Image (cartoon, rainbow, N blue to C red):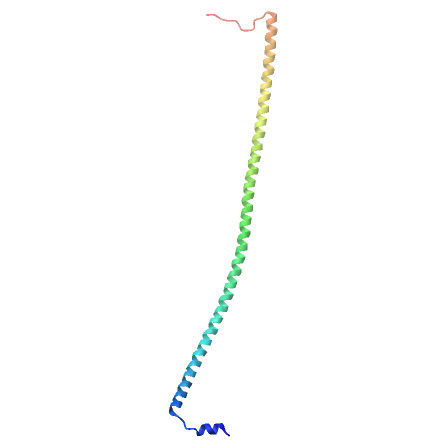
Length: 144
C-alpha cells in the first residue's frame, strides 16, 4: 500500500489548505522571530562576557590600588612615628644640653661663692689680727 498515493487520492478540503497555509506562514514567522531572538541572545551573551572581563580587570586594579594604599599608609605612619621620635629625641637632647649648661653655670657660681667665702674669711682673720694689735678696724670717722 502506497501511502503517498493514498494521500494524493484524498479529496482536498479548501479549509484544510487554508489552515495548512496559515500554519506554514506562522511557522516561518516564528522561525524568523526565534532566529532574531537567538542573534540578540548571542549578542547579549558576548556583551555580558566583555563586561565580565572588564569588571574583572577593574576589580584586580582595585585590589592592587588597595594594596598600594595600605603600603603607603604604613609608610606614612612609620614616617610620622619617626618624626615624633626625632622630636622627642631632639627634646631630650635639648633638655640634656640645657641641663649641662645649667650644671656648668651652677659650678661656676659655686666657684665664685667659694672664692668670695675665702676672701671673706681672709678679711675676718685680718680684722681679728688688727683688733689684737689695737689697730683701728674702721676708717677714721669724720665729723663735720
